[in-house]
Structures are given as C-alpha cells and as structure tokens.
Amino acid sequence: MNLPLSEILPMGASAGPDGHLRIGGCDAVELAAEHGTPLYVYDVGTVRSMCREFVGEFGARYPDSRVLYAAKAYLGTAMARLVAEEGLGMDVVSGGELAVARAVGMEPGDVFFHGNNKSTAEVREAMDYGIGRFVADSFHELELVEAEAARRGVVQPVMLRLSPGVDAHTHAKTTTGILDTKFGFPIETGDAERAVRMALEAEHLDLTGAHIHLGSPIFELEPYAVGIDAALTFLAPLCGEGLSLRDFSPGGGFAVGYTAERLPPPVSEYADVIARTVAGRCRGLGIAEPRLLIEPGRAIVARAGVALYSVGGIKDIPGLRRYVSVDGGMGDNIRPALYGARYEALLANRALDAADEAVRVVGKYCETGDILVEEAMLPSPRTGDLVALPVSGAYGMSMAGNYNLNPRPAVVMVEDGSATLVRRRETYADMMALEVDAL
Ligand code: LLP
View 1 (tube, rainbow, N blue to C red):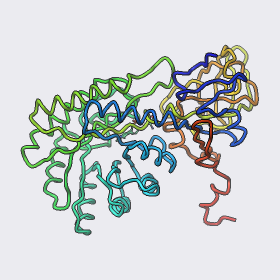
View 2 (view 1 turned 120 degrees about the horizontal axis):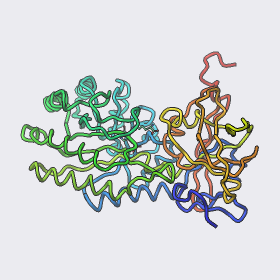
View 3 (view 1 turned 90 degrees about the vertical axis):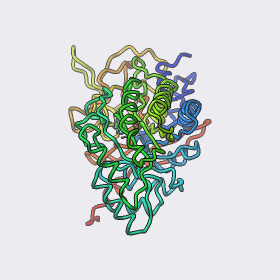
View 4 (view 1 turned 180 degrees about the vertical axis):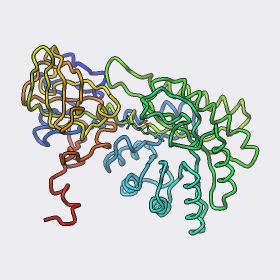
C-alpha cells in the first residue's frame, strides 16, 4: 500500500497491513508502547546510506576528500560509533562533543575542533586528546593555542575559518558567510590576511589550511561555488609567501527535504559543484589541490530520525482551527519556534488512513509559540493517536532542553527489525541531580 510522505520518511519505511508505520523493520506503535513518548527513532540504514552517499559522491569526483560528520546535528555515543564505522571523521564544537568522540575512541587525527569561542579548558582537553586540527575562529584563539602548544613544546596543526562575504540565502539565524557575523576572519576587512600571517609566524602553530561555512540549510549550489572561489582567490597569493595549503573545507549546510514540496539537489550535485570549483580554481590560480574536507551534519541524520508523540487534548475553535496537543514540543524540537521551520506529520498508528483534516499540532510547553506543525494534514486525530514527525533527526534532540522541567525524550535506533535503546528517557531525578541541596 502507498505510504504517504515516503520520500521524506527514513529509507525503506513502510506501513503494515494494520496501518502501523514501520521504520527499519520495526513497528512504530510497538516502539512507542515499549519506550514511551516522545520518542526519537533513528533508522541506522538511512544514516549508513547517507554516509556512503557523501563518501562515494565526493570521493568519485575528488579522491583526496574526507567527510567529517558535523556532530552538532545529533550526537550520542551510538551515533559517534556509527559514523566512525562508516569511515567519517568528526567536526566538534565543544568540550562535550569532544568528550563523546573521545569516549568512543574516535581517532584524534580525524577530529576537527570548530567554534567561535573555545575556552582554555577546551583547548587543553583537545590537545590532551591529540586533536587533528583546531579550526581557529579568532585572534584570541590563535594566541590561546599558540600559548598552550608552546607550554607543551609541541607544534599544533590549525586551520583558519574565513568569512568570505557570501550570502547563502538561508534563514537570518543560520547564515554565517556574510560580513556581519560572529564567525570567522573576514577577508574583506583584512583580518583574514592578518590571521594567516600571524599563524605562519607563530612558532608552535602549523597552518594547514582554511575553512568556510556559509550557513545551513543551503538549497542552492551557486553559493558554494562563489564562496570557494572567494576563499581560494584570497589564499592563492599567500601560497607564494609561505602558506602551504594542504586542507580546504567549504563546510556543511547541505539541505534536506523537510516537506515533500521542497526537496534539495541530490548530494551528487553538491559534490559536482564543489569538486569542480575547488579543482578548477586551484588549476586556474596555479596552486596545488588541497585535501577537501566536507562537513555534513543535517544531511547525514535528518531523514533517519522520526519523532513520535502521543496525542492528548484536542481543542476545537469552531470556524477557526483544531488544536491537537502532543506530549513533546519545543523542548525537544525548537526549530519551528526558532526558525519558523516547517514539518509534515502523519499518524504512526493509522498511517494509511486518508489525511483529510488540517490541524495545528502543538506541544505541551507553556508558550503560545510552542507549535510543531502549523498546518498538518492528518486523518481526524483522536486522543491516544501517535503523531510521527519525519525528518526530525537533525537539531531536534541536539538542541533539546528541559524547559518547564520536562524530561528529554529517549532515543532508539532501529535496524533490520531490531530496536536498541541508545539513550534512556530523562527522569525527574536526573534533572534534580544537579541541585546541590538535592533531597
Ligand atoms: N560546519 C560548520 C562549521 C557548521 O557551523 C555547521 C552548522 C555545519 C558544518 C553543519 O551544517 P549542516 O550540514 O548540519 O547543515 N540549528 C540549525 C542549524 C545551525 C547549524 C550550525 N552550524 C538548524 O536547526 O537548522
């Protein structure tokens, strides 16, 4: 039978004859009964397949390329092991993400430390670990890493994050390539050149290359070409002055289809533009081709994840709207409230029923803006139904919080018909454990 939304649900998702949504061969209704809701279900096969697509498509066009998983999209120990198994390195942005990489024994040389304000403690933790690269974001950070490397008597590889002055047409809160951003050394103001010189002169830094990240999600291909061109055009003359450009990264930001109406270009097209522009510009500028580092986060995990919620109260405002309240909301998915992000929904227990009613799916948080889906087409939802939100795998759980002291959801991974609980549901005791006067 035809499952609606199959192009945005995890790969191979289906509906059983009972109308239950099946993900990774597991019945979503049974998963919810066993683990409770809200529940995040990740399909391992979809994650693996996306990892392979990125490695394959970029590798075919630019052999000296490496895919780094941008851990901020979703990280736990199971996910870190999974991407490492698929041969990906990792982009981390905090001591916490670094600690997870370390806990699963990720090869330190494969870990790249991003972020605009690393603390002294984080720099030390990363160097204790033997981090592959710091991607330095400020003069302050260059000084910090130089001082720490000097103290240890080592030479630390670093890359520089450049701000190329390119608008990738994303939401204002997720654009990072323009001049007016906190991220990176702007080329336009001369800071990028000063940073290159400072890093080259620093005794304990080995400047291996540069990085840009324009924002996310980026549905267009052109900004990548423009950004790469701007960065390499800036870097080329410096290659004659002592810079050995061995690493180059155009960042991440590869879009995913949250709704069936707006699907992004396939990975192969991003790979085409990026590989062609890097190779072509290097040739044109007379510089050696660097290793290419790609940092997808969302595109690896978004589609793999489905959030399951139980319907509680339903409120009708005649002539206006029907509100369907679920047991999660902005605490586990802040994206609609923060960016106006749009999702689609289906009923996991009646996936094949005709979706003929427009309703607003809202969460349980004490905020009017706690809306998960402004207008979802569902088959007349009833209390006790199970709402599934496809494409919830990225930046839901990783941005989750304890607002209203709601415990954060559990996470299960499904593969070949078996489900593994990889993160248990938070308890009230977990939340109170940090209070120093705990009873
Ligand atoms: N590399 C760098 C340096 C980044 O800052 C980011 C995302 C990525 C890679 C991965 O981008 P992705 O491939 O996942 O799009 N919380 C927002 C997105 C903010 C992303 C921040 N940096 C959201 O929920 O849409």
